[in-house]
Length: 101
Image (cartoon, rainbow, N blue to C red; front, top):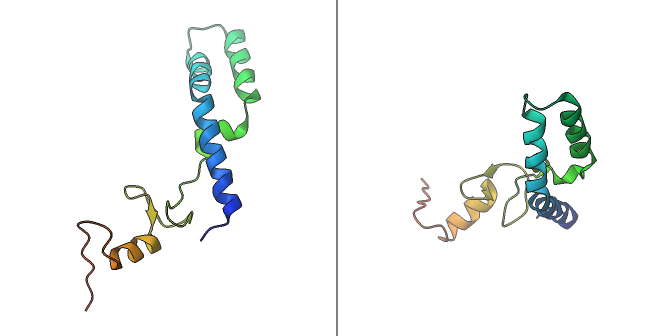
């Protein structure tokens, strides 16, 4: 099981990213638009830099839904390899056949 503080920190980052997503998109569109004047693009860049760092989507870490483990994460299943093995052994994942020989 991962540290509770790490999991909660990641949850706060998800919440902030959702909260600021629209504002960040508008500012990034202004910055990337080459037809806008340089001063306006620079002001947008400064406003973007003033937003909280944790509101950037890139700072969110993929974590296992079951244990919170940050490594060996399967995106499609949203669990780590260890949790996948445990759930598969218990027969809780439909369609997963656990082979042993």
